[in-house]
Length: 474
Image 1 (spheres, rainbow, N blue to C red):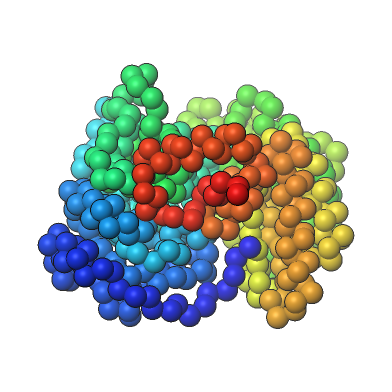
Image 2 (cartoon, rainbow, N blue to C red):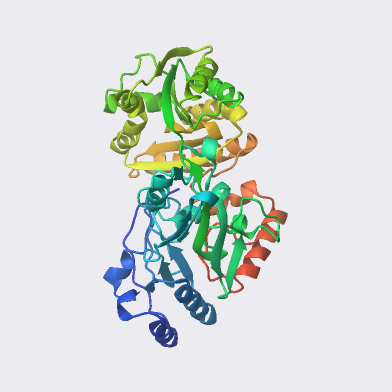
């Protein structure tokens, strides 16, 4: 659960000897010690906050390596930070120490259209990668909602996805190799510059998604894909969530893969329509946004196949956008949802769980039952093509009864997800928020091996302590 942001309390400064060593690596303008400057690097989009003891604005991999070596020698906690868009507290320095900001390591090092790759530093914005790739008719697949201002290093650290992951995959599926610094200051290189390669262990995909607990990514070679020539959008409204969930299974079991497949439950549809007239039928109990992409020669066949799969019991209305204006109108309900939720309840716990697509009907039905059981309003929407739904529990934070009910309800939601062979986080990561639940999903024997790997990469445990993996049981 995500607590509200609270005032950060300044902590004691770093040891004088460590500060002297840090000052030898960075100019005073890039080693932030003033509390007012440090506070800006103490929180992320989870609304958690903790004060770091110092902030380093690095400009090169060599500086990263030198800073990690100092922190390792003195046992100083170290948190790497991109742009702080994470929602689970992964970038919050809960143990104090040094925050290492990658924001100035933002160079695109090369674009190789023939090899379909782009190499860049970790602080490069996702949007800058897309801008560099687009003139060559290429794009990088991860498209989180923060793509305009989130960094590549952060996308990789959290294995970011987005609406188009259903067809194109997440960050882990779209990287060729990386350079990183381990917790004891070793510079390592993993992966290669080819799409085929089986030499050595796959450390690239081990580091991706590890939330900065194993090594700090300094640069990466990203796999690019051809930009589709055209896109078409369908909006299907259904009588109830069960009908829409069944349609998702049909859509994903036929050859024409949608490039995105978004789901809104009945409560989400009502909220969106109340916030802004989206032109939805009055009796809409659920909604799917189905996007197809491809070439001009194949798009009509893809739309026809997806339209046929969307047909079935419970379908009320199926519309296809014929222009950019109509596309915007069909997306209106999805875009209206976030502001509608913000206006409805001051407290929103957003959990992005995922289940196998064929288990979606059981998930949406089970969540509805839990909403009634705990008397908590739950709004569910998300990336149905991956079985990845955002389950939003809404409450008044000033009502102790509601807040206690949220905790019990959240536990039941997680138990439901695991009973359906699902996972507790589809794309938001673990960070602080879900760390204590990880042992519900991963057996202790497996967690023990993960802790051993952590010690190999980070012998003193200085990298992002308290995140991702729970401590060993007593």
